[in-house]
Amino acid sequence: MCGIVGITGHENVVTDLVEGLRRLEYRGYDSAGVAIVQTDSVRVIKQQGKINDLERVLPWDELHGSCGIAHTRWATHGKPSKLNAHPHSSGALAVVHNGIVENYTALKVRLEGKGHLFRSETDSEVLAHLILDQYDGNLETAVQRALKLVEGTYGIAVVHADEPDKIVGARRGSPLLVGVGDGANYLASDVAAIMGHTRQVIYLDDGEMVVLTPQDVTTMNVDNQEVTKEIQEITWDLERIQKGGYPHYMLKEIFEQPQTVLDSFRGRILPESGDVKLGGIQLTDRELLAIKRIIIIACGTSWHAGLVGEYLLEEYARIPVEVEYASEFRYRSPVIEPGTLCLTISQSGETLDTLEAMREAKRRGAKVIGITNVVGSTIARESDCGVYIHAGPEIGVASTKAFTSQVTILILLTLLFGRRRHLGIEIGKRTIEELQRIPDKIQQVLDQSAAIRAIAEVYAQHSNCLYLGRGVNFPIALEGALKLKEISYIHADGYPAAEMKHGPIALIDPNMPVVVISTRDSSYEKIRGNVQEVKARQGKIISVVTEGDTEIAAASDHVITIPETMNMLTPLLSVIPLQLLAYYTAVIRGENVDQPRNLAKAVTVE
Ligand code: AGP
Image (cartoon, rainbow, N blue to C red; front, top):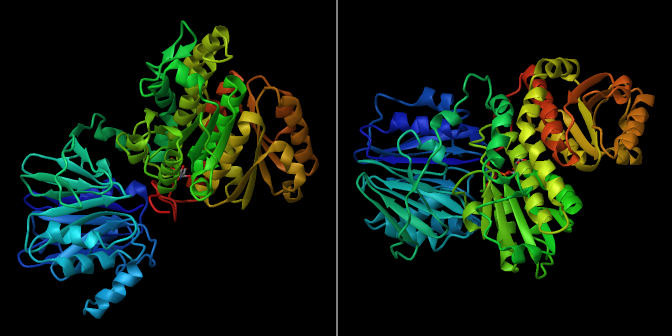
């Protein structure tokens, strides 16, 4: 999704702006551009395509300036093109914008009436003209006046040639943070863009603005009242967002999972009492007991993690759970009764649908726990309390390690709620002992990557694939199908295995690969029957079975084994081969694994 970088105070900002954009590439984009403040003007260069394409057209010798802004665009209004790329300019002013200006048509008509000439099809361009229209020598005042007229969401960075070392930023509904440096200051939509320069950051909240010069950072609100903000220190390493020898971020992140799952539960388990301690959840035992119902809100892969959570929390903590697509929840009239707890799950912590659904739940009186990965993200800050999943930066657009870490946190929450209700100490202790073995067991699955690649070779050129699972493995079937379609563009569907006979069975023929997650648990006998149903119609069966299984293995065309574990923990193992299968399929097909077409890492638009 769109990314913003701004720098003021470097001798020449061009190279560093481009480098900042590179660090945002993982978010997904279709065009990019820079605006450099020069003597009497702001020079804007932009290009459709990737950062390399932009670099090719940059007139490096002519571009000099100590202050500038840059942007990666992911098209919403207007096709991906050079003209629609940001920055947008008007006179000696340039702006980059993340978000959507909802009343741009009305504003555009008004500004055109005043002689402003529009060049692009975007909603964002209206901001350049609008701010210039309000400009009388002070950029922050012009931005404040302009934003009062804007409906919609924004994270913006603005420069004007008359105030050559100043960048003004403002935020409503789209993330923006300030990097505080020494003799230089930075603005970005994502900390990755500026981490090479500083680790001291200020996260802006909605309604806030910032004025940056090389020496000063002034935070205020749109009503021009100064706001005091805390500077936070980023503790993780830049190395963690680099590829570390792997050909793709996605593969690196898949292979990190023994460590990231460990990081998610480390320091939070109490093996002696079969219990857990989650520092971010400031609820007393009495408050935990008062929870009568849980609503889980999320999108995409995080929603699949939520579905796993539903199985776990209902079965082991005996609390009724509903899992909602955030985009649906926010526009329904959801019933929130006293005792309703809302779990908001989001890797990025910035997904707009999830954020707005969370705000809606809060407005209706629900207590909200945010389960996020990105520290300081909007959902993390706006939830009543929260748990970080500690998976480290996830760069691949297709989420992998965040999923297993989200599931790990949901296992911990199940223990937290369960131990205060019906879950005995023995099962609590056994679960924690087994959880501690899971990182090694994930490694055992990863060790089969060559065999999984060989399976991918067989089916990589197929056009469809079906994923089946039961119980806690049904969400894993959904997640396996999502991974495949996201990065290989093969059509894939996930189903509860027994549901197959109500429709999808019509699709099964010798050309249909069917991935069946058939681990040894209470539904084993049933799923064995489903495997036979596929076999009878000559579908190709790829089974994920528990080590030692012979029956389903005998009926399958290909077998991947996972080590035996408790039912509650199975998803942490059964999802791994499906991630690898999707990854290798996409690689064999020659697709752009880390930046699949049309997708963005953080979906900050509706
Ligand atoms: C996952 O592979 C996807 N790219 C996508 O479904 C993602 O999980 C979804 O957009 C939610 O993102 P979030 O976890 O950052 O809120």
